[in-house]
Length: 444
Image (tube, rainbow, N blue to C red):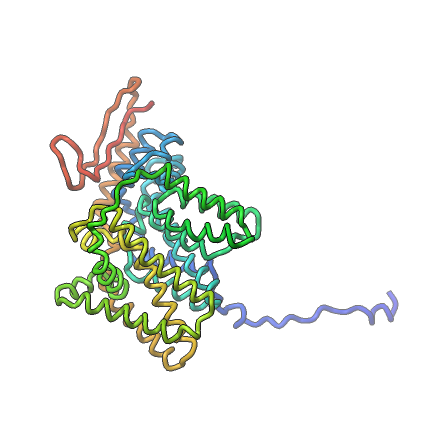
């Protein structure tokens, strides 16, 4: 090698390694999912997984269905008037695992899926507002607030509600560019569609995309057809209970507006003081005023997002009231939160969106915003007990599963030897309770 050649050699430039750059936290969808799961884990110390309850339909429907008959066709059975593909499909797949770990897997998959759905709020808000920090902290805030309970986050059957929420969230997002991701998302979306009748409420958005947008027109058209087919062939239809509509205004103000902000327990105190409707009207009025004042500061996509969230706030609540016989207050206003769950999440997203517009334009409001945020979190801390589960009952479930696993019997064709785990209300003489579990010990 000559001297001239040596002079022509260019040594690589030294790279200055910046430790601050590498340690800097950058919010993304993966971090949103991880933090959402961490929040869920801390709410009950993963007792749902270590001491699973097989609560509600998890025990008396999914477990019984696939333990007593592990057949693919059982994914498509009707329950409560419609087919629920997602929890049945997950239950079918999980029953390939050893029996002792199946109850824990029910809860673990439920927690992971719940975290996945809440992390979708990050993607949606980042897509609409273009601010990943806002999207990140909003998704974490929503999952911290007690909008659900242990049934929603740790029970496999209750994931039907998260399937609807995931379907609604995905209406805001384009399909992935990579083929394998697009195929996976399409499969997931059809699974979500064929899980809950409320998927019908997403039909206008997919029809609009199929008709007015050239991108992915075929896929959106297929989604619309899938929604129609599910609603027609996989849902048993009942007449609407229009006489129950008088519950709508108070439910909207009290169970949605108030509970979304102060939580269910503090709503009880407001009911005791006779202030529920007053507080709810104040909350709705303030949010409406903020939206009206800041409307000129909003981008077109932000306005459409709030309009669509208002649709998901009002329409699912009306469907919940009219679709069931809810003439008495207890089943809706004092019963399970599932009837108002979607509406409360939509209302929270509207609140956060409205506040974020103010947050962008005023430094003074930025400080007030964080003070208000801490206050809301503190007020809602009293509702953390909603996520607690019974460790002793979980141990009883584990003992029951261990007994069933160790005492399988050789029986004749068609013979059954049922072993019951008895619990629940609505007990009838000689029959297990409503939430009890019955396992056939016979091998076939």
